[in-house]
Image (cartoon, rainbow, N blue to C red; front, side, top):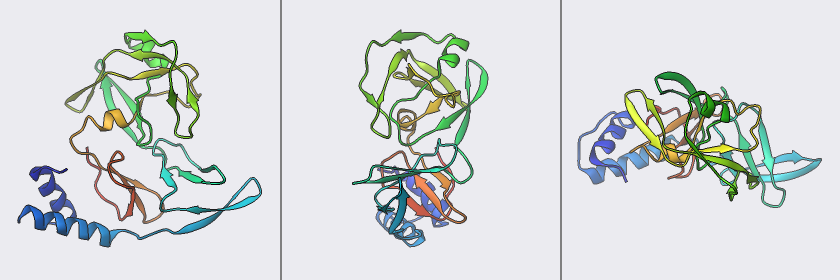
Length: 222
């Protein structure tokens, strides 16, 4: 999926070189990433509601990089463990109509969320929505009251416009800023986010295109 330029950039970061045939560079890049991986984490016993369940940490663990803290387990027969970053949620600075604000970043949701307070402050044009079929990361129904028309902002010097940004009917007290998610990440040609999970272990995510990897720290890239 990488262009030649992206491949050379990745190889320069990971391998320390960028010259050579494409096939050989790709092969060496994949081999190095596999060798640097912290390996399989295996199964762990988790106590949920006074019941001990076994969770496959390789297939059933998700990092929610917008979470403020803590770890939660969902489901008993087919449990999934959801973890927050060690150092708190991942945020990005960007500008809306010339005003700098912070937005949280999530790799597990599909549509960017704008709080109603942000929409009112910046006088964003919205279309009301009578019903919706969105589901949260936990499979719960999400009630959407409006869709924002052309939510436009600047990330550095890059102008980004998202066409399906939503406003929730019921907002959490923690939902005080924009949450940029998969639709935002897919607007980039290439994205990688390195998030500290434990002391020397980092979760590398790329917007869901490849399986989450536990590796040594890698540079953040969008």
